[in-house]
Length: 187
Image (cartoon, rainbow, N blue to C red; front, side, top):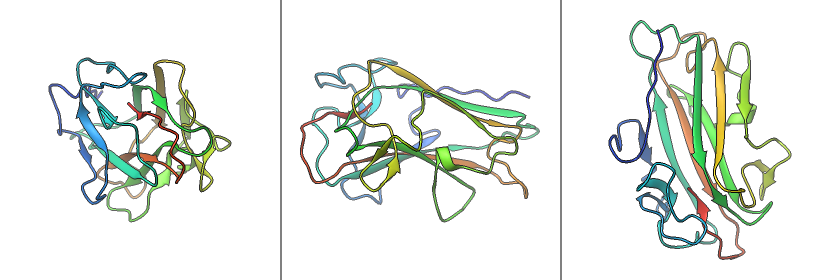
């Protein structure tokens, strides 16, 4: 069985993802980007972006998450997530990173350190443990060269490890330090 879905922020807003409302100053928004570099979404007209108009603020942590639920009867032989994104951050200081957790785990794990897949994880155009921001957090940092297609895979069992779990949560987080460099953020 193959499970596929597509989030374009036009037709199925909120079906699989949510912006973290517990973060008082969360700046993720769904809308039409209106900045200099982050000036249009990949799936026009809307995208999910760290504020459609303003640069990201100092000392900010903002997140949104996606939940992946296996459908009934799905063996989940391999799972893949890919996305198109652009970013503009202060190099090595500010950035965006991706974390995962299974079911109702209480802690998040940076995607590049996830040890739960049965056979291992494959990634393309992702950051590495050497691409870090303040706090030694592996993340996308600096400014992308236009649109980037990033991808990560779980082989054999996406979101279901022994004992089998019901779902996988994937969280995208933008984090900034105390230095204001007037940069645009993540789209």
